[in-house]
Length: 288
Image (tube, rainbow, N blue to C red):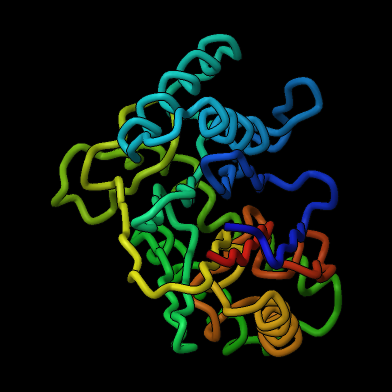
């Protein structure tokens, strides 16, 4: 198995909260959850960067032949120890999604969170497997309501100041809900639709540990964080999707069901400027 294509991008410059890890036994993509406390930092790193690093370190320490449950328990312990060192409460967003491909047959993809994967068969057939969580769907749909109502009453903002005002209003509308989303993280009740799995300092229940077995005739496997709407067969396709969304729907009001980038309204930042990406992206295309 080898990486044949990779790319990373960030809307936050050098403060990307995604991380790619490759070991002799595993490939992994880790998507650190952006902290609502934007002023928090430790040793120059954001909360999301620390979370992704902890999740990646757990993969580096994971022995060959382990299971997704083994990884989850190890990552949970490492995160809990870090929380204690850093003085963070359980509701703090020291959390990361995890997308892992063990380098062994039968090929499996492990998912904790909402990063995406896809695969291509030897016949050329392509299958995309997006991973989404209802909590984000609800939050993003409410944000869209706020933005579309402004579009309907005042028209789409054309100036930087008007875009900034709308982005700030949309963020104000969803901030409280997002700041408390960790209350639903790793929810023990499988019937709770707003619950979701994430690598943090609490146990991930079995219903949020997803191990997908791939077909025997798989030829390529693609992994990516949710800075793309879904995994794409090539990096160029992913970049083209982002460029089209930025040009045609910078507030992400309808063409993309995902894409809320922290306190920003799609590609639109709080100061009204447009970022090149709506979220951090990590992408791997692996030949098997």
